[in-house]
Length: 359
Image (cartoon, rainbow, N blue to C red; front, side):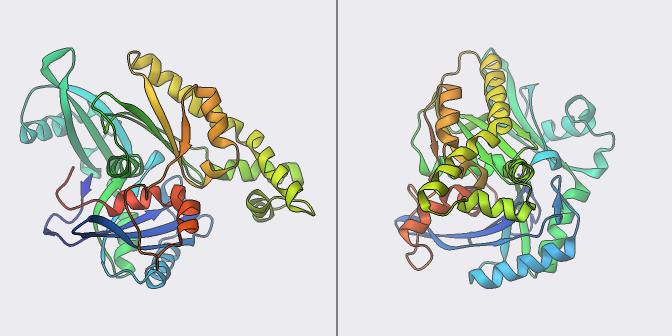
């Protein structure tokens, strides 16, 4: 959404850098005559405490990790698209009288207090997208406004610059998922899907109709909350609980598999919050019938999560596949690996699909 380097133009591909609180991922997608193809994907853990509540707390550590990831990936593009989520960004839908973009930008700036919870717009970067006419009043239009404090954006862009890369676009996690969805899934103009990304510390929810966002919400519960509950139950460290969450505990594969299946109980707070969010969406957009829920993020890969959410929501729920229509170089990913990492690659793929000047 935020065009950081407006001077850059042209068709060179951008690399998507998904900076999470526990892991960062880098994806590169190149265009060829048959369409886009994933040419690079790499990920690396990020030390706990480097990113807190969506803000960069330890910029030098983030820069060092980005450098290591970039070198490991073999990525060729130095122009980067990255994203914000959670408390770091405000996303608001508003209704305005019909006007052109230049007039709308001035109005939002002059009357920002009506739409955004900031006292000083000089300390804020914002962007907007005109969604379309108001369905109940054609003299009005629906607009999506996105805003973030400049100091938050600068925390990321300065760390990326220090790594020798060029941050070009600052997107939003929820909208990166939307971009990935548009490229990989077929839908009609009235089809509604809910895209849910459960990261380590934040869950993003984006309801899209006909490929356009009509409702978003982020809340600060994610995979780490499951690990913390597990650690308390087992009386072990966070790191030991994280290992148990992934591998399971027990002397044989059957007991480990049974343990992993039981993890869904620890995910109840996340699933309950998702259920409340979807219920609110349904009550606000009562006529909208959700056709599908697509689940992504490391937290969404817990065994039984998709089935439990599908039962709670009464909607077909499945793990997202960002490679459904985007092939990948077999040197980059093995087919089995693509299936395993697809849900955690979804945001990075959406970022890598961005081009300068698109909306």
